[in-house]
Image (tube, rainbow, N blue to C red; front, side, top):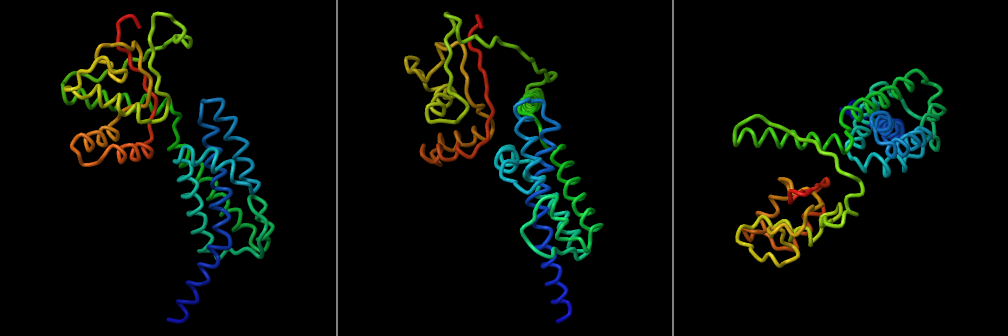
Length: 267
């Protein structure tokens, strides 16, 4: 029993000494690099590429906070890659001889086991990159996929074949004089929540209210998508399960995308 305990301590020591660096540095860098490679957005590429390179050098803050946590899935991919490499490091008893050197230069602390270190690094980078590349999608792709899934659901309920129409609008449509636009921005707000609930509520008929569009006072309404997650909160509020303050707090943690809603024929 004492021998088993000693072996377990050795494994955990190796895991903390070498695997932690991999999880926190190179794997997160590889996850950010996958975003840079896969994304078609020039701004995201310009952010993700240098962030990933700095992570490989040992500075992970730009990659983690600027890219991976922002899109979340790449961060999870980095954790998976780091965990896999740490598991390998514990199996082969790969341990660092000191501290202070991180990133790809961590090999300087493992010169007595260079082959094992390179294999560990390959696992961290390879797994993190592959998982991040598979999971990450540009926002436009997510919106298209969401529309396709909704079309399939609606067709199953009402029958027919699922169809998704794609429209292009002018960038300067706001400048058109006879077009009235109500823009709630990208964030869920109290004003937006009241607008959605007012227009979903069949008993709400106060068309003079600026947060009512049943009379089509606005030609175009722009704001976050009121998807199923939001609808659940709204139903809980309408059934008096939660109060309005709880509804507002719940909206903060819901990830949404932007939606353009067209209400009149002229647009």
